[in-house]
Image 1 (tube, rainbow, N blue to C red):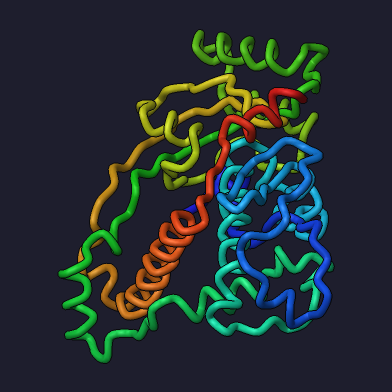
Image 2 (cartoon, rainbow, N blue to C red):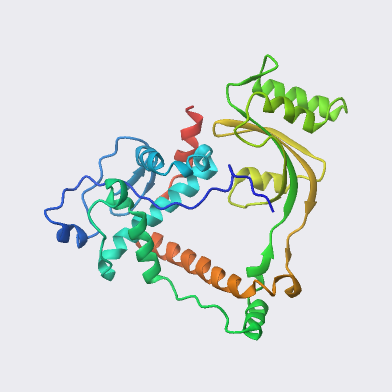
Length: 308
């Protein structure tokens, strides 16, 4: 099953930079949560009850190091998920010293120890439950019976897409107006969606134009949620998201379902391990966000793209 790369970003770990200077490495490792309040020099995307914040500048600095995540952060939904992971990493870093988790060295990768991905992972591993595979097929089948949601497949759609950068022109027309013309031409039967996609590809080739295959709908993304309410044959858009404008066509739709045991028996043991890890991580995030008073400002994230 194909996923839209732009909409389903990978997971990252990071946090905001601190202005406090430690006298020694040992003092820094055991410093209390009530650190000096970070000076805010750019819009705040997330905040903690101890006064720390995650800003646009923090995000940009991290993405300069994690260039593999830049594509994921091209729209508000992607940035929101990235900032959420930043906040989790910082919360894990605050939790680590009290658990006796030692740092591998000052500064972490890239010189910012508040966003040390490796340290955050070490803390997460220490406080997450141990996840072991079922010992045999009978145990795996028992897990399947008790946890059907672990084997749920979300609603999926056969999706075609046109993607154009904001400010681009196609056949002499601004991208938004040109896409509206394509909607009218396709609706009138004068043009096929794939023909319009080929025209768009002449202008923008960095992402796939046209058929994306079967796409699993993601409730965390507002565009995918909207596509979930569309019917087979519908055209959705133009839709502006981040630095791009999109046009979609729903070729087919499959409802979500619980996969039958016959289809998942071979992979059920590994799924049990993965599901345990997913649930453990979710529980850790919920607990630490509550403990450290984490607040994500989705309006501030959306404002990033409105200013462009």
